[in-house]
Length: 229
Image 1 (cartoon, rainbow, N blue to C red):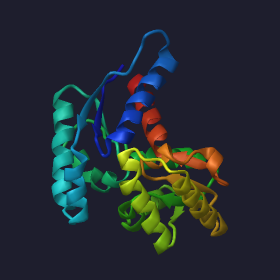
Image 2 (tube, helix red, strand yellow):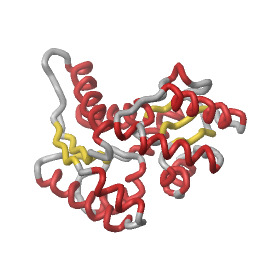
Image 3 (cartoon, rainbow, N blue to C red):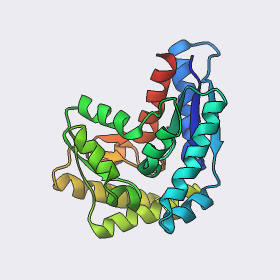
């Protein structure tokens, strides 16, 4: 079994699910008392958020690259960035290490294509929805992504940072997300990528009129495949 390195704390609420899914996946495949071989570098999320809010993405990239290098030096054989937003600097992180970075967008695109969906809605932080890195990579993989209108993007973002990253799960916010997903369906989306690793803490398949793609679970599952490959 290969050792997986996790760059987490982005936020810790979703990183905890990465750890759970990795161990559940290994146990399901190997049985008995088997669990995942992994190492975690966990950030103080407030420090990363300050860099995001002030547009200091190069500094944020350096921090994640340093974390990846430490995980590689510790014996990890692949690295995961436990965040959709911070995949905006995935190229810098990959360039800093010799081991593979398992990319969350690639794993998610594979799952979308298995359902023969070619147009999806994308929910996430405003950085993920408004910067081009996510939609452009999906498009290169044959998937068109559309994002909510501006007011809906603001609400999705606010709920992530003001509630989900703090462990607050409100039924009213779940209903807001459901309504936003319905508006994406009306614009032609055949499924919705939950492109923030905190959103699946709030929204489940039963809340949506469209197929949902839980990037936290998908990413962790890809890591299980790699670890046992």
